[in-house]
Image (cartoon, rainbow, N blue to C red):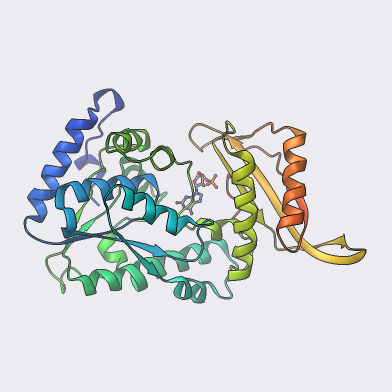
Length: 325
Ligand code: XMP
């Protein structure tokens, strides 16, 4: 990643989406020439915009992979691949579920879980694919806020090649291309719309990189992910169209006594959070109506096996954070 002083932000008032797209397409073609490039698509707005720019520039000479890590939302890998197919872009789905779950086995500390996911993604899975592909050009969705946060020490240094385990002194010739580095999120969304991405991609609510693993307190296992995934799907259905910044379901580690079919059921607890915010720096809980909340509780306790308790969080950020892990 370049230094912040080397990158000039394009402010919204100065952003002409079509000109931006033309300039980036030309720049990507200029750098890659007749070569082959690769990128990883997560379905988030940044990697989606980069995928579209790259395919406009290179067509089939850009290989796009979607790494299925096993911790995404219900149907997500398939939906993303299908959305891009409709746009004429073939995305390769790589099943890496086993590698991610084995890296997460036994971990309960939030930072250790994040680190395991990052390392598995870059070093084990994507790093291997990049090396085997022989592509020397990597398209990466770094945006202007990432540059700032790296400089401020909030994010780790986004040196993607180092993260991939590629030693550029030994393995010479790799080039990272960062087409959206001058834009903040709102600008990226506008370019996404201009590129013809569907609204549910260019306008996607924020979702953390560690995906549903950020919503499981304690060990992340396939079974615990299945529980939080089902609760998330119910929440997404019930809150579709709600005016909120972000909502999430969290699976707690502690169990509580419940009663099912007349028998004691030492069951699981789901905590629901729904936030009003503009920038995720501060946030307040959305005033969801009681009818909606009880419907959520009814559905989660009847449709998600083993759940006996559903709570709604009322604390503000700060001191709370948006995610629980
Ligand atoms: P917090 O929990 O810090 O969240 O109040 C602020 C915003 O950042 C998202 N978030 C993450 N995004 N990796 C990400 O890519 C993470 O580890 C992570 N943790 C939080 C969160 O969803 C919210 O929008």
